[in-house]
Image 1 (spheres, rainbow, N blue to C red):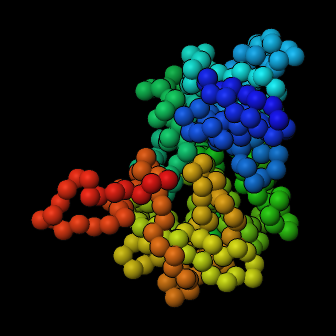
Image 2 (cartoon, one colour):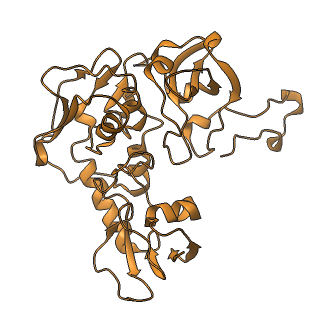
Length: 321
């Protein structure tokens, strides 16, 4: 098995592992961000370029560097390869430029966007973006489109990551939407006026890294940091039946697939579980969902509550990843 060194940390990985996958095996401290790559979706990756890294040594057999940044999600590890990510000022500056391009047409409507608080583009722009923009031209504008009874498309927010297209290709019986046109006029849309109504179409909402595809049953009901995520499951004949229920008080505001620490759905769920089963009696409750303490959703979620008279800072333990 080949060994690769990323930002000074070495790991041995199976043949065929990409640089991004190897970085995730090491840990978040060396892992580049990814907006289009999705582990469970075949052929994803290579579109957004946020995961670029510098290969300072190609392999033991060829110690020469690769002269230009490469997409880590599409570049396989070689024996003796050395990679620079956060330790390379060149890559940090280049990624800042990538983020600037992603935000060129993306509206700053986070205060009214349902994705706020769990938006990967928010995290990316906070970590790698600039305080202002050099873009002086009019942004692209689209009308909101209802893609069937449960999903609304805000094409104005779309960054063309292709994840929703991969979901439709690989999970559903018949894909009726895709990317139309080319270049700066490309857009996600349905063919003619067809609606997206297949059993697994709701997964497009979960994989969308921004607020382009939103759940119409959850629109404007609450900010995610005011909700309480709870793990639950049910016996479903269509899917795994393992979900996260998002409570506000006693009401289930939405149902989503369970996500790992990289923000990727562990197992895709059907539309019946997602949109039709919103009563506590429909589910077997497992307990509070563990939330990374770095996420805004972790606010006010604790493993145990202490009496005010016995309050000690160390007694309150936030959820750990």
